[in-house]
Image: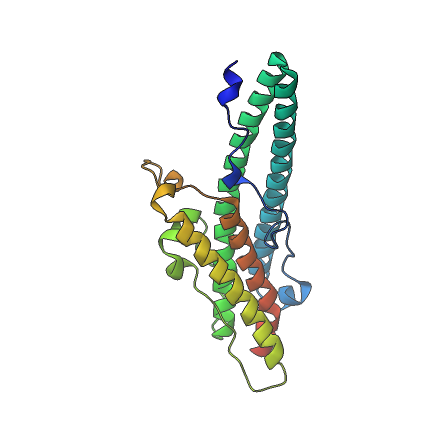
Length: 232
């Protein structure tokens, strides 16, 4: 039986549901929507909703893969060749679907993170907020030029009574950014890089990288209403 040699799934591509970076995240709050240009808030909310949809689809696909893998073990134990062949096919198709969703998630979250980061940065610098131009940025651009496309943004600490809330937002931004930097360092390992004419497929992208891009974008948009209030 050829099925003996087939690995049930690639463990490195599984989603850890205990990871705080997993799952859907809040969108830009109504308070932030009133303090930013309408076209910016609409786009940020659309991007956040799209990332949530892909994140939930990815989680569902992973659960399917776990279910098929469990069935695979049962089929092997019962020596059911017909069922085993079907389960192998389901595992292969679902694993491919997870890979596609992961890349879609990473690319969508990359645009969202760059937009949210730039809008927050313009806000804390008290500059006029303009619509970011990075509509076609891909995840590969983030790990090639992280500091250029996605810098760490911090809200200036003032001497008023809101210093504690400022520090809470800054700590959240810093913590996620550190995790994102570590994930990027992992992606840059030689084992994860391969030759491909399509630069967006030249590296192995893990779900955690996409999740952290999504989380950093969320940290930025959650800090936006507060930062905008400070700068009024």
